[in-house]
Image 1: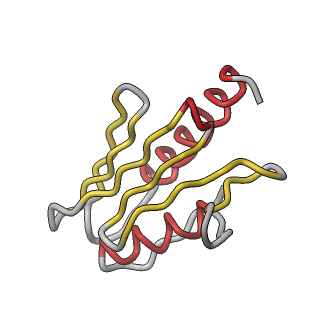
Image 2: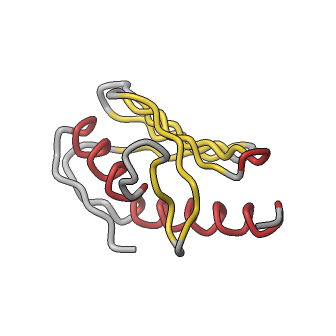
Image 3: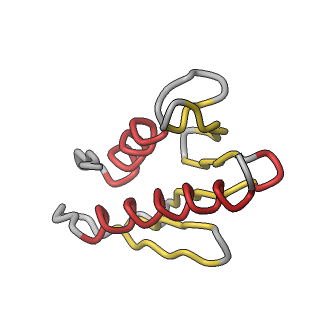
Length: 107
């Protein structure tokens, strides 16, 4: 994968995440900001989730209250380097945990 392809994939993923969060109608507000390729989700309880691209490694890194994760792109999806779980599944679980409400993605 080239750096350009990597950035296109991550940009597309972050756009989809932001669209889903904009449509979120839960009781707790989730603020989403992206600056310099880093997406920060801030919850009403002041906890945060950080999604960061690591261009040299062509990875996405995810930092949540419960831990940190590194994801590699394979077979049209992002998978955790340790657990092999899907990025969206782990992110949805972290959002549910930190917001205190059920959350799922419709990507």
